[in-house]
Image (cartoon, rainbow, N blue to C red; front, side, top):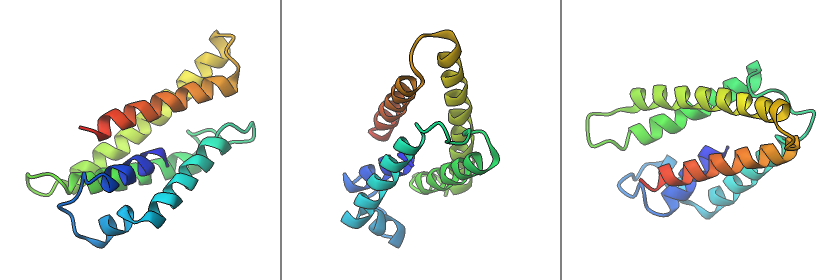
Length: 139
């Protein structure tokens, strides 16, 4: 949900002003901004619970792939080249898969290879993901 929240923030700042479709209009709305914040915050909190499933299990990974593909398609549609929705969807899904795998491996390494408590490692991972997303969204 962090990616969705970052896309919504970018839309609010005018990154997709050339798009007049209902998706972009809805994403810019104050209601959507609040909903995306609540969903992203909820995911960040729930992800820290010991009962949270692995991000690589079928349900969470499928959700990440779908959201990544949808975000990639939305961004790909903004290209001045021919419509790049399909390419954007593929890139978005691959990025989501790689992010899930990298996050899983980093968290496992941190739990095994360092004395950093798991919740602190998870917060570090979230900060890195947010920072990278914010930097990429500004380009």
